[in-house]
Length: 86
Image (tube, rainbow, N blue to C red; front, side, top):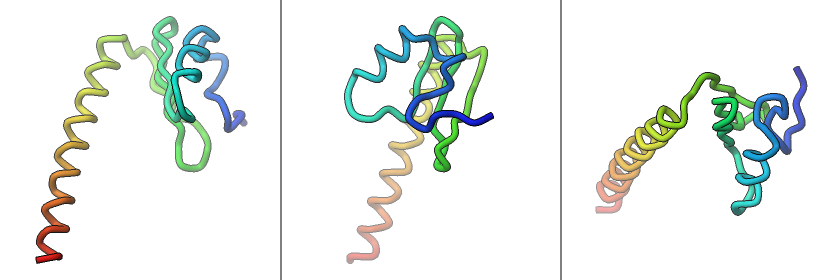
């Protein structure tokens, strides 16, 4: 299925959620539709990874887990750079 690389699959992300999230700031690489319970994340090749049946609570939990993992990765990266510099 070919998709427009500038927007997530229109059949799964409703117009309301798309408009709300796409006007929130810079280019958006992920969208969540609370009406259809779908999370769309842009892949490096320009396509979209879709997760369906994701409740708003699950979506918030997934984002929180990702933030925690990112914080750990960032801390380890800083420690690795500090070891190389010193």
